[in-house]
Amino acid sequence: MTVVIGLTGGIASGKSTVSSMFQAKKFPVIDADLIAREVVEPGERAYDQVVEVFGKEIIKDDHKINRPKLGSIIFTDEDKRKQLNAIVHPAVRSRMLSKRDDYIKKGMPCVVLDIPLLFESNLTHLVDKTLVVYVDEDVQLSRLMKRNGYSEKEASDRIKAQMPLKEKANLADILIDNNHSIEETKVQLDQVLQTWGIG
Image 1: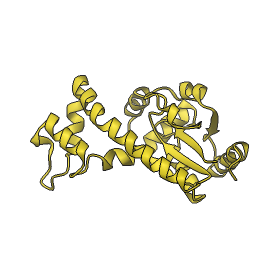
Image 2: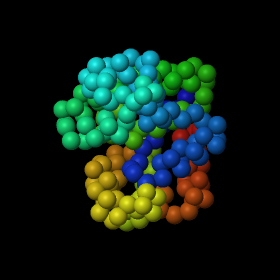
Image 3: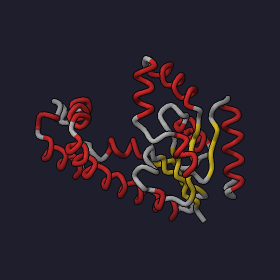
């Protein structure tokens, strides 16, 4: 019986750290962000659709999509952002599901779907359990400033653009408190896996 875990968190909450811990245990992690990049590579159906909607000017010399250029278009235009999401999200979802089902067929004890917008995009029905990597807001702020070299305002704006971690924490089946050392986070993950019967 495979347990499908939906892993999420916020910017600089340590979600990728926990994701690597799962990988170190040889549990497959299906990363939504990674797949979102794959589905818009040349040759993919979503790539053709994006070019059709946004025009040839978002294409670089190597035929790949110019992500910063596309980003600047969708950040200032809500309708364009919705159009992009309507192309990319279904493609990402269908690839994630086919990977998930392959691992289930192989009899993996656990498969992790790493989805930053698990709750915001109402994707909890794709998983059996939800796990949120949580940190206090001041820790999140200082880690983000340190990691990306942001000013306090830049970091704070990016955190505010997401669903608050406290809200995600209330929706989760279980929390990993990542305010402290990596060792403590590891111990918590082991406890979670034991609770869910995944050794």
